[in-house]
Amino acid sequence: MTNSVHDEIADQTPRRQVARRTGRRPGQSGTREAILAAAQRQFARLGYDRTSIRAVAAEAGVDQKLVTHYFGSKQQLFVAAVELPVAPADLAAILTGNQRKLGERLARYVILELLDRPDARNSMTGVIRAAASEPEAARMVRELLMREIWSPAAELLGSDNAELRVTLLASQLFGLIMARCIVAAEPLASLPGERLAAAIAPTLHHYLTGPI
Amino acid sequence: MTNSVHDEIADQTPRRQVARRTGRRPGQSGTREAILAAAQRQFARLGYDRTSIRAVAAEAGVDQKLVTHYFGSKQQLFVAAVELPVAPADLAAILTGNQRKLGERLARYVILELLDRPDARNSMTGVIRAAASEPEAARMVRELLMREIWSPAAELLGSDNAELRVTLLASQLFGLIMARCIVAAEPLASLPGERLAAAIAPTLHHYLTGPI
Image (tube, rainbow over all chains, first blue to last red; front, side, top):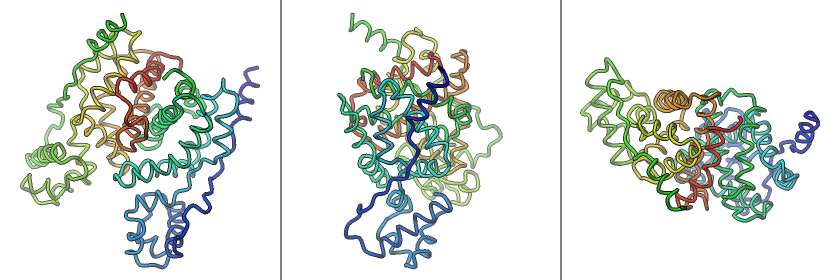
């Protein structure tokens, strides 16, 4: 019985897919697109720290000034280029499945499918680090998350205070990224993912379904 | 009865005091101390963003290169200079009072006495922003929090898994600072402090006393 419960949860946890945002930037020039594509390749290859505006410009074959003209800072370029590793289908599968297991399913997805996978972890920590760097990047992160995750999630929930519930969830998830991946607060940072998911599941369940 | 419960909690919530860390840096030179003192004044007066290594050097009356020699980056200078707005007496009052109200008392303290007071908020957001900026600053933040808050708090708790409980708490509190003060995720960011404290109290209570 214990195993079948775990299998059930594993079955309900969607495989991580990368969200594609086709058609998101209408009217943009070929130059802007070339810069974005070069930035995506470099951030993926080198990570957030070792990517520079100069190297992105060189890879895109444009002058460095054009990169700052279109995107401002490296942080803003990152937020414009990042593909959040959360697909709409994942959100729907998590939030509309068996309601009794909501917190558990979401906790397992966030820890096992996002934070503990290197590519998704790099995207998530990059988003946090960009947001913390400067107000303009923070604004862009807020709009990105609102558009791609918070609004669709609130709509899927459809409950009282859905928007507040979603941002309470976000607060715990922001903090998990900080504590586990950026500050590396021990013993949380090295705790096996399954155990960490079990520890935070009641929190996520409370935010999604409890009195707030 | 409702009022008396609130009064009781208010009475149990210690007034915020600024921790003094006297004698923390033995053997440091007068130059290093002068730089730190100038940095503390400037960060307090101008905030994190508008403080520069150049202006700190000028105020301390030393060459800018000496500031980077002693402290590396502006982020590291900030972490060295910051006085965490959490006094040991506050921690003890919160963690050793009525155990049934632990989560509620801690939530009210964090929201009402730290995040919603401009000076304490500036310290806390500066710590998060420094930690997110570069690995060396993240390491310094980890050691600062471990020494000043996490270790004493785990000792005060004295329960099973106390260190893990404390870092789980830290994860929610990191994320609250991100969501309320840095990313400004609405409606959480504008929620009245009393209401936000009530929403997160069960989470903090779970991390402090629940099965994890």
